[in-house]
Image (cartoon, rainbow, N blue to C red):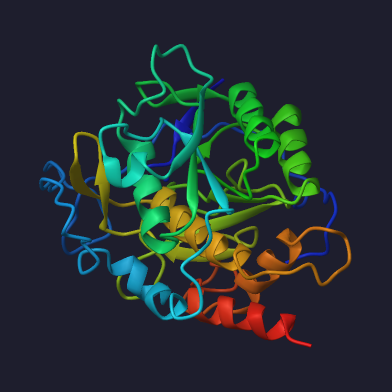
Length: 330
């Protein structure tokens, strides 16, 4: 069963069962919308792209970075090079030095001849993560081919590889049928101290999406600039938190930037926040790992927003980081 890229895309430590008893289902292929204007829906125009400039950090264009209060969080931490975020996607562009210099390891599980990002989605996701956690490092785990396709078994292999090679945060902006192999990989990652962030999907309803639905994933819905649920975002009781997912500006291949809308971009914001928290988190539960503390910090510090099915609300990097530091003080 091919996987569709989601492009519009705290509990105690231990292995947890999936939320509820939902049968396996298929997710229709949906792809990130290009830049949109006055509504949460895709238009037919091309994404706005500009030539990359090393002197232009584009922070003003990245409204989501400010909305999750990452700049305030940087007063406490900008991340740490020891924190590696695995991007399980279509690859990360090798020609964008702003990102390529951050990639510490890579692997290609597809039939593509290259681990480079030909499709464009993985680079956009990686750029958002790096914009929020500028001192953290990236891991390029290519599990979707040059047409944006993959399989659950490939994603499962990618998760295990990422964990075994040191990933602390794993971003998954994919949707697929429920799979025992995939769930086993998710549970393995959690048991080894990683946190898995997964996009909730862009179907606009409450039907669960996998792997986001699994309890050991942090399921992320998307919000717009009014801090309400983006029109295309999936939502429901199984969603944990929300992140900016509308008109998100980030890197693209060939040293360009562009806008994308979808829960995959929302997940990227949350992965960036998780990376910041990992840089200051300590094991307070005594289990030898900090992923349960990181998840608690994310979920307990959210900003409440309007609407149902968005979990604890909009992630807040500053509140999460300061709460983590405060809980670590004697």
